[in-house]
Image (tube, rainbow, N blue to C red; front, side):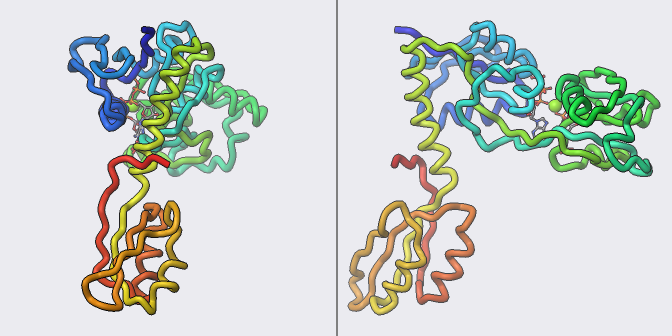
Length: 285
Ligand SMILES: Nc1ncnc2c1ncn2[C@@H]1O[C@H](COP(=O)(O)OP(=O)(O)OP(=O)(O)O)[C@@H](O)[C@H]1O
Ligand SMILES: O=P(O)(O)OC[C@H]1O[C@H](OP(=O)(O)OP(=O)(O)O)[C@H](O)[C@@H]1O
Ligand SMILES: [Mg+2]
């Protein structure tokens, strides 16, 4: 039987969450990080531990079929690759930043300037879009130091909390793109590999859906049930069961994380009591 070959980051910001999502999908990986190629014991998957920056090339060359990597890298060197699923972690931006005291107002002010970056293609495309000609200085890390040591007038790098910019006396001037970890695939997969990928995507959907949902149980007097049920947007209609106490019921439902607190407030106002909230491990529709 064919196996799907998935590349994940060997070490760095994506490593831990990438392994976690595979584990949450019920996939057991036999070995630790010292081995760079390992087999899953209970799913037709072979795991390659690679540098994130090298992964687009491995996918393009068909050495790996699938990978978990930052979407920003697809903009940089993988536009021909296919995003199969956005995974919701490692959210960040690729931005232009300039010294805090700089009076530059727009990207046009970068005409003829030096910009340090690890993302030269992303930057060049952005400059081209705005018809700006600037000199790109390629560095592979510690990009935020560049303006302070006289290497560049501006930088283009990853921004998340903004604290690295702040500590280096820089301010974000343009957000070029937003990124998160994605599951990407090589453009050509055999039918058998596509079938394994579909199985994996089915599991990932169940895991991501569950992460974004809570199982909620509450008690309510029967005369408030209609109002309470109207507030609930659950998977289907909620489960309603009688309590031992007469004229009271227990209501079970699923709530989405992002609307959770608003709905809980409404439920309380409508007469819900003893509200219990539990995580959901998997959610299959
Ligand atoms: N501060 C951050 N906050 C959130 N996500 C980030 C942050 N920095 C990087 N990322 C995301 O994580 C990915 C991996 O970043 P990391 O710094 O671990 O590796 P790298 O140096 O880019 O790659 P390599 O594995 O080739 O050394 C980036 O491509 C980006 O998508
Ligand atoms: O906005 P913040 O939350 O401060 O995050 C942004 C910083 O995080 C990343 O660096 P990382 O720590 O991955 O170091 P690296 O340059 O060695 O990759 C990125 O290159 C920025 O420097
Ligand atoms: Mg980094």
